[in-house]
Length: 245
Image (cartoon, rainbow, N blue to C red; front, side, top):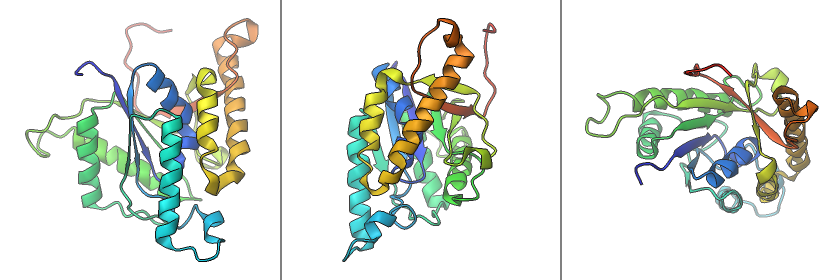
């Protein structure tokens, strides 16, 4: 329907959307949004060490397993649509063909907001290159001269979700989202990522810490809502408001 609210999460690898934005996805699906997730790669080379240690493993077997994990996680989060671009990883191949494909998705979804990675990540350049890719595709999707006749994009906010080693990434959250009511869904999605079990408790702790930050910034410490888990985001573009809160 024309009045359906939509959102788009652009994930470098097939697990990134789970760790970093799973709560936002599940919560907004519950709020009536249709959230689309695009995984640019499966993370088959660089983020699948546990699978590569198994006897007889091949690249295609790793891809198949990582896709299965991501699809199961998407179901746990009630994702409206998940797409896999299979662009390779370490490094991602983000050429013109990939950009045109991504722009088509952005224009089809017409997201109210978008999400991707931090702008800087020296430990994994796939992540920061994905955000540059997302920014360029957002810009192209707004251009009336690109594929005339398609509906052009407005100006959705791009939120940068939390990187793994926050202090090293020049990432500073200015938005905290309470995900307490959907935490069970996020944890279930996390546990779908069998290839990276070492991160399950790490991202559980991140959610708890951000819940504390939500409480401290919302009056929760003095009797407000008791947010137990939250996610942090950095907004790229200014907010336009009619009243300051």
